Length: 64
Image (cartoon, rainbow, N blue to C red; front, top):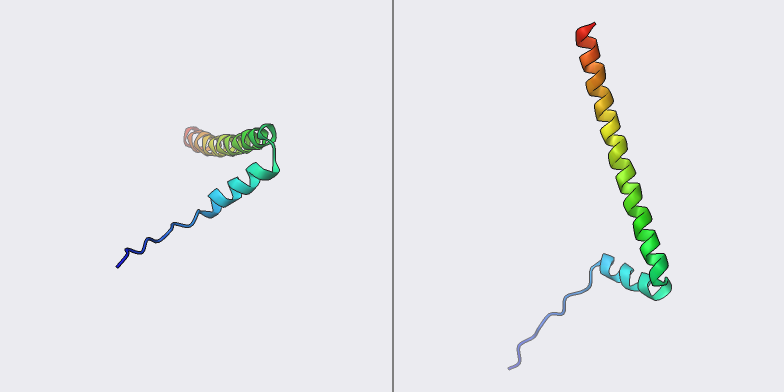
């Protein structure tokens, strides 16, 4: 009797990256990833600004 081995299916992310690598050149892929990283960083900074604003408003309300 032979052992049956299940093959693991690639994740959706892996499949999309494979398709992306076939359709888009390396430079464009890098640019797209850099752009997405910038978007995420901008969102993080915006969240930090909102939190800082809330803290400043709370401190201002206490002192007035």
